Length: 563
Ligand code: ADP
Ligand code: MG
Image (cartoon, protein in one colour):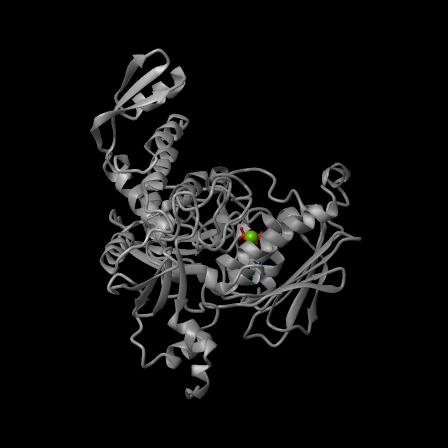
């Protein structure tokens, strides 16, 4: 008896039924997931569009002849054996259905060789997933090659319903890219119609892989970090059945720790027209997860201009028994237990990444990071600015504050920095104070009056088409053009925009001379804000010249010994 077993009927009945393979993309998805479960770190994919053929080769664990003979029969899998296993899935596959479906829909052939064996086996399957003809020995490298030819040729209606090939290929490319981000240890070589289509190189973490897909974005625009937490409600899960199978995920998933990997584009540097790079992966697979995406959008809401979306790619690695993959056949949706807890963790993780303008190291390769570190060995290097005290040096053009800090220089625009400070003050305390002299305004519409009253401003009729404003938000009281500010406020429906308007009106204007004390005060307050990168309208606040960049620019690293 090989590793692969047929699932008990009771378990089969628990598994979300449905067509596993409904597109070319699904063929690619199922085959590459099998390669990942087999612990491959090199995967080659070839697609031939004229014959609708897909071939996936890997250097994974391979299959014995016995396993090969079983692999395409219904509900056979080496990844789970019992119902208990179904609730703690550590592999991508578990239904034992993909190869069987593929045998039904295409001409399926698999060659495989176990790493310890001297020879491999080749099997062709009939449309029931049974071995057709005699197994043949083949000389192949350890690993597995699955070839599915003429996909859907016996399903004319399915074939007709497929979208145009370019659209299918775009989906496949996205599928491979996402899988690569979730499994950075793998190198991918993808061919299309006998020509190389694209390659993705492996790395240590997703931040090594991601820039290969975001070629228009510099790695310096991205920051990433991995957060680990002990999950508070640790329950010892039931014993899984004795599985000979160990998945590569199993080693990175633990029963009680949660790892959250986040890579995001700094909002003052990059944003996108569509939300195409807001992504959430759970335990090795990207999923549609509106509840988590909302957390991401909310975190960026006040740092991005309207109608712009962040780049934010997240991978949550959670105890396997917290995830129910059995929601639908394509596994692109999940049930996550302790959803609120995970939303909070993700929110905290993003907040921390956005908090301080981090000294930006090249994260793309460990070697580059090492080189820059060495170049700076005489400069104290801190990974966070919390313990750095920025020092105002001078004002430039009555507009910029020149700032020195431990890892470089900043040029801070005084107006937007102050706007950010006031905006956050208004968020934490909304204070209305009476005016000594009422402000008299003309021509206010009933809606305008309603809006002003709604935010707590006291206003009453003063004469024909005249109104007296008797109280205002405290920060506005000394504003230069009070009348224009109140009129502008009377147009705002959204409380957030109202606060942004007040902050903008009340903030120090550019062109105003400031002494060193005032500049230092402003800096200290700005440093403490939650989102120091941008003003509430999304404009950047600070231009940063990091020592690391300066060292590179002045080529100081050339004289340093390199390993
Ligand atoms: P599942 O992945 O849900 O187990 P599949 O039908 O996709 O079901 O695969 C059936 C079995 O065939 C797997 O459980 C695995 O043991 C084996 N298998 C499939 N593809 C590979 C591969 N590339 N390398 C090694 N074993 C494989
Ligand atoms: Mg599978």
